[in-house]
Amino acid sequence: MGEFTNKIDFEVLVMVKNANPNGDPLNGNRPRETYDGYGEISDVCIKRKIRNRLQDMGENIFVQSDERSDDGAKSLADRAKNNAVMQKALKDKDKEAYAKEACQTWIDVRSFGQVFAFKDDSVSVGVRGPVSIHSAFSVLPISIDSMQITKSVNSETVKEGKKSSDTMGMKHKVYSALYVLKGSINHQLAQKTGFSDDDAEKIKEALRTLFVNDASSARPDGSMEVCKLYWWKHNCPMGQYSSAKVHKLLVIEAKGDDPKEFDDYTITLNALPGLDVEVIEGI
Image 1 (spheres, one colour):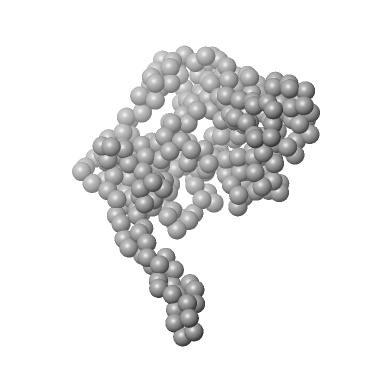
Image 2: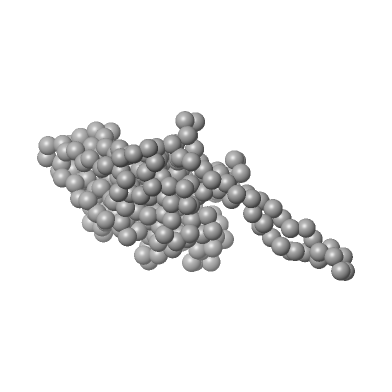
C-alpha cells in the first residue's frame, strides 16, 4: 500500500445557494448556526459525505449509511463480527492485531479512526486516525429563509368517505453563503494506521467531488458546489509550519454587503517560504 510521506493541510471553499447544508435536528432542522449567526456544517456531516464518495469510488467503508450498505451487515457490530481475522484477535485479546486488520480492511478507519466497543465483546479497541476535519463555517453571517409546507396529503384513510388531515411542516434554506472547510493529515498517526499517500489522493478526490450523489430535497442538485480545493503538502513528515499558520494563508472577503455568487468574494492566497500549494477546481 505504501507509506504516507509528509504532512498535508487543506481547505475547501463551498458555495451554498438555496439549500440546507446541514440541518440541526434539535432546532426544527434549521441550518446550523453559531451564536453570532454564522452558518456551520458539522465535521460529522462532512465525514459522512467523504465516506459516501469513497464508497462510490469502490473503497471499503466501515461506517456505512443504512441505505448504502453493500455487504449485508445491519450494524457496525455485525460488520466487525463478519471479519474472521478481527474475531480471532478478539478471542486472543490482541488489540493491536484487531486494530491493524480493521485499518487494512476499511479506508475510513485508517483515515478517521474508530472506536470498537460492542456489547458482546470483552475487549474494546480505539483507533486514532490521521485525517482531521474541522466543522465548516460561513464567511459571513447567514440569512435563513423558512416556508411552511405540506409534508403529506391524505396519507391514511380514517373512515369510509373521509380522509386524514394533511401533515404540515417547515422547510428551511440558506439563500446564499460561502463556507470554508479546513482539515489536515498527520504523519505520525498515518504511520500507526497504515494510511498512505494513495489514500491521501483518494481523500483529495472525495473532497473535490464532495456533493456528487448527495442531492436531496434539502440540497437539490447544483445547490451545493465545491468551488476551490487548496492542498498544501509539506516537505517533511512533521510539516514545516503548524496547521494554524497554514490555514491563515487563505483570506476571504466579500466585495459588497450582499454577495450572491462565488465571484462576489475576493480570495487572497498568501504564501509561506518553502511551502507549495496545489489549487484544484471543484467538480
